[in-house]
Image 1: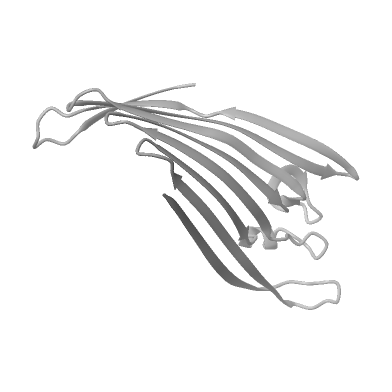
Image 2: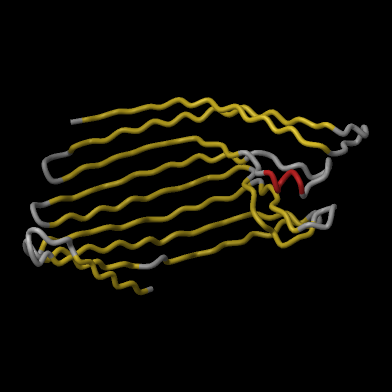
Length: 201
């Protein structure tokens, strides 16, 4: 069985603030229009296996502080994101295992670079090229009616090309997020489940 979905979103954001531009104007406006489409497909391979694929485009406008701490020469631009994801799930009566891979490519991502801008503030600056990619795992096992075990893990890589004084610095961050194991015990049909979470890196 195949299933397809699609979504189209249009957003309009308008900022109005008091400040000076190169012409000495005090009252300034910034109008932003975004188009955010996304689409996906899922396949039920058989009773035990499922596969899904999706692509989405999203935009995010600068926040108030990005404008307040900038000047006409350092006005922030909106971020753009293209997100590609693929997932697989294998399920049995008492056991399941799933994996999801993703690649998030950013254009003009706003990040803190540690530099001070031309008005003396530590601000977020647009980075022309950056991405985040990784893989997520999740699994669960119903040992009995009273005991259920589950665990998840995420491994990711982040890369940003930061321009400083006419040169480009590439920053790569690899992270291994917490692997969490959850044990759920049901002692009585009318009592709430008790959960014990154990995390380690």
